[in-house]
Image (cartoon, rainbow, N blue to C red):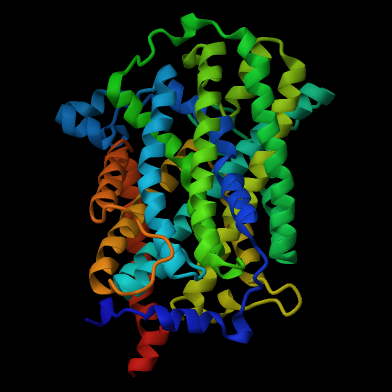
Length: 499
């Protein structure tokens, strides 16, 4: 039973007050909401909207490329499907489906974040509710989520910076230093994606300097990218051709579901808000505001962009790393393209900042519990940030981002995030039964119904991902368990207290 030993919520809160590892509390509700928007409105709205609408054609027929729902519908014939079907203009319904799933999961996050205002997000909640082994699994899963998410964002940033250089200055970066050696099928290949690495390291420097400085920079970038989105919707709407919306759902519900499984990546930023729990001034009040506010604002923006984008271009032409900029280029809307590209770049930088922030806090929390080596929880004496974790995260993200393409990262990140959402929703149900008397400044209504709906929605979205993504995910978890049993299980703080 030592595998499922739990850490009391009171002990977690007490450990966070240790002066040697205490983080500075500087964030309020607007800063938290801006952090959430900074993560959510990033590469997804400017990159994955197009690829999810267009679908993905894979030249090699294999059952590994079929989605789980295809396997359930077509059985052994699922391998004859070439890749994943596109949602078409119905990508707006994909965003709506994801928003519903995220809303129920977001309510669960809000309750647990207000009860357990500790860095670590779902990892910390699992440690307090479901036990150490589950906590390790979810922590290892979150490492995958944040790292792979940022790799995808960095690749998207590289595509848009190249478009900006081409449009403004007529400068073309050398292909060998602008593209990965393992590109998407049909994409250009190079030696290493240098822009993806450089932007990741630049963000790392900002994060090491301090959370207040990072939050202020993020707020400015959030304002710029929201303005760019509004300008795009208003400026491009005059070029909408309603014939592009027919057929609205060319691949039916499987296409909408598969599109939702891909664009789910665009919503994962709201759980980054909960990783800032130890650095906000009034977490019991501010965390629920930040989480719910992020979801509402981002859903409105996503729906607007997806309708306009599929209205100005045929959805089949949008399967690129920079679909918004490419659609505007085809219309010769070059001035608008510059504005949107600048907004996209700001959006991606802010996403990188928030994801890198969240990733370092996950490692920090796991190290403080001694499930990872102690240097991950080292805090800079001057800046009061986990500087070693932040630098390691920068290289862990930047180097793979220079090697692989965007779709590989997005799909792998999505399955990890959905798995985390399932466990958080389950945690609300369990904690209501185990500790019903504990004060809750925010309560999920209709428990266990709402958490159960969140679990079902997340499982359905996971079924829209390819079988190969599931295999990669289980391989990642197996690697994590191979680390936990010889190291984490023996060195954790709970193991020492029991010894």
